Length: 103
Image (cartoon, one colour):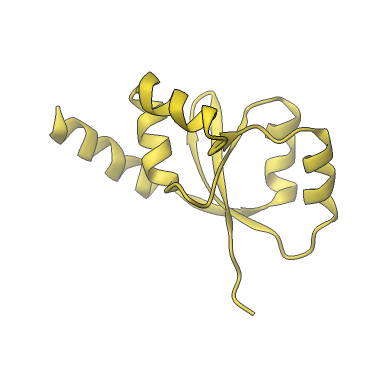
């Protein structure tokens, strides 16, 4: 089982990309965008979701480490300049984590 999870993680890592908010907004409006909190690794979260690990995913939802952006946050993201996310698709969801740009 561990080798299957490692293979899944490697696959997801190869499919990870970077996008600005404009490319993710439609997924958020369709309620298919999951934002991953900075305390959690994007690939850890994506692997757990893809593997249907309900215990881990449920705990992260309870701790607000996995959220769906509401209309207010979507509007805030739309107004922000230089806002980028790493993302990976775990159908039917797009999982994204904000990239912190150094100043």
